[in-house]
Image 1 (tube, chains in turn brown, cyan):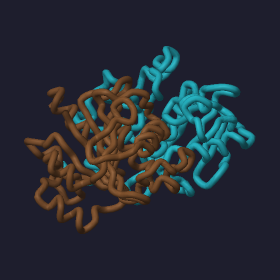
Image 2 (tube, one colour):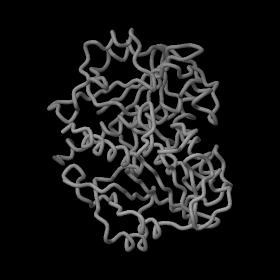
Image 3 (cartoon, chains in turn red, cyan):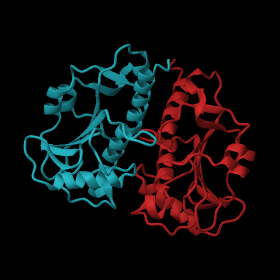
Image 4 (spheres, one colour):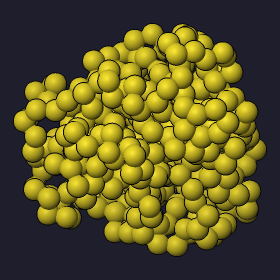
Length: 190
Length: 190
């Protein structure tokens, strides 16, 4: 099982955004949608052994976490609108402290990074991190920031996590490169 | 200069598609839009030394080629709708046998793969190709298919091109992985 988590610093926490304007009305929800798809899609199938959590920190009611489970997600297509519609649906249901499923394989709860850090031993994708190709061991959970850098508070929270790089790419492209490295190792291509 | 070209087997060749439904009305134009963005975007800037050509083979008037030039493109954002809007604009102008600019850095002409093959020495991304990491030399132009495989006619056209892999990914993810390999070599990371 591989887990990805992406912090969306401005991403809306209710369903009041337009699928026709994810960048602006969604608080750069487009970035998070591409990360979901980079996490979960292979060419003609889904990566069933992957989940992807989105930490939403935008208005009106931060923090919420929306999780896509590759094991059980349905009705997900590789265009941006498709995960966006599922996120919108998740954000529209009442949200408690435990995950509640809003559609198959998509769930939502209150809380954000601090709680996720208690549940996973994340490697953090970071420009100054160790080149992933040169690491003998890689963790099974990876944390990324969206188009903004981690805040000082977040940097402090992840201070103990190993850092991996290079990550001068968009978050979704970083996930794709990382998947490639994990695929190569799993497939014994080296 | 690095060039990417993607064959869009069902992609519409006029502007009569909806930005709100790229997969269906655009003939999987969403796939091509993601390829444009994977080709041209770095984290906080554009790759100015890259161009990306889309070979459109769908109705009503195939074939057309829309080219994005990283050198001069403007008003391009990393969400899918942004390149889609520029493609729509390109497909709306009269189209001749030579490239004509429809907006800054975006141009369109009649013709498709056969003509592109006369202009570039493409490496073809292919599942059975040689692992890119193991190639001493890589070309500066790469050809990919969209969500469909190359047709028999296309396979015959590219028979003489070197094949690179692995490419069991979505076309845009393949571009991202390939960029990473080129970046590493250019940066001397190995």
